[in-house]
Image 1 (cartoon, rainbow, N blue to C red):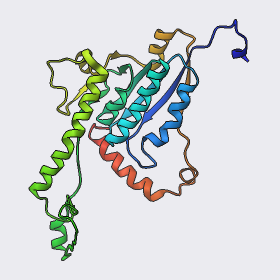
Image 2 (image 1 turned 90 degrees about the vertical axis):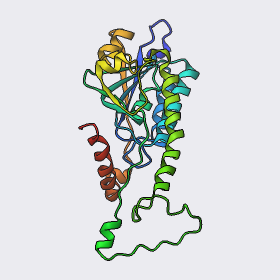
Image 3 (image 1 turned 90 degrees about the horizontal axis):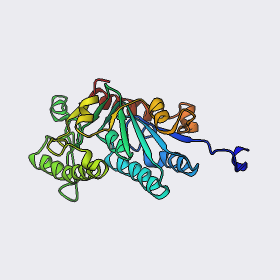
Image 4 (image 1 turned 45 degrees about the horizontal axis):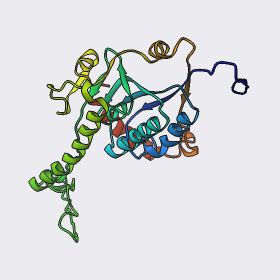
Length: 263
């Protein structure tokens, strides 16, 4: 009823979207398709600002780019500020997401950075040979068996992977430079995939300061600011536990990404 009474002050609303977990196309992951309804809803409510709670070790570069672009597009169209608050980690794709905000705030112990690209897999040719297993591959096109984990690694495959990674890395660098601008320490080597903690990240201009979400938003918008959490709905299959295989494999991949940061 409040909105129909013109002389009452408009409430200060800040939707809060949690970006927690790895980034990818799986049911467990952060991705544009799953987050799009939440992001659109946040900006449709005509809020004072939008807040992001970021806690991600990264993942898909494409999904990171799509999610960040959606945030930025709506923020610019509707002239609504976006504030990112990092919890444990915003690394690689997680930092890509944080850079969609107008400013980034961290805890003293938050880990940020890892502005780089990685390709990781396993190789099993010696194990297969010991077990007497023969790998038979027939392809049309010499690159069709590229980076096959059951074949010995070839120098040309490594060169090809590095060639693929370079434009992705460059897109990441351009995104960070566009988002952070002159706040970045121009003399520092920020794009070698290194990571930094808390105040060190502030000094380098990767983030804007050390602050927690609730007190910072009250400082910016007053003590009466109303935070409105927006969360993803789990599918029926997820609620019933019918995607066990996907969940198990996803958990292993997630664990490996988090483990890189001691989490």
